[in-house]
Image 1: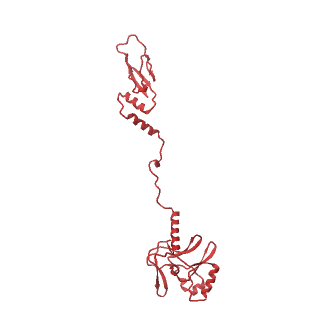
Image 2 (image 1 turned 60 degrees about the vertical axis):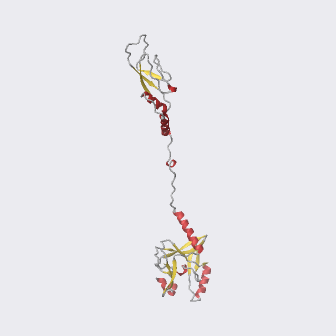
Image 3 (image 1 turned 90 degrees about the vertical axis):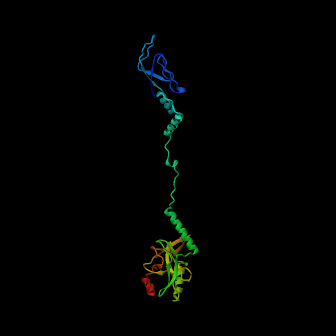
Length: 274
């Protein structure tokens, strides 16, 4: 920092306001603990002049800290430093020299409460697993329709893609299914509720011919139904389920396409054409 002062004959330049860095000017033009530069060299004189000229003295002082800078600046103005100014200057200087900080140093990381698609899919599968394992069938009832027989109607709304019910029955391989179908064919009074499908390159059949209290076997056929079949795996075992192919309103009859387009089946059951 650069300080400027004046020197009169027989007087000393005011000392710097710092105990460890007191600097006084001697008649020979030298300073203790600081460098002194004068624009005009001081010449010793035996008799001082009546009106000695004012000489400009420039002093260069090496300042070691920001607190010292504040003190010297206050001394240069001829003022007293306010209490705590040195400590405040030190805090400001340390704040400038501190490293850049991240936002997370001041605010905690906020985790999103939204679930990913994978998590939602796993939760939905677990729910269907429980419904199938416990045989729970909710949101539907069986009604009798004149000239058609039994039918299943929704007692609540179903959203598109929502699980409706399982087509529950005996899971058979193709050889056992052919044998059972041959037995059913011998008795025309016996209905046939056999559903064939492929799973992992093998052909299986769910035989729901036996009368039970399960409603999935009673859902009627329609080529424009509001449900569709889907395979659901539980521990490597396939289960045939019905899901809503569109939004279903309360009171609608539940229908799905049986998928049988063979001439023999249509000849025996003409309603398969619709």
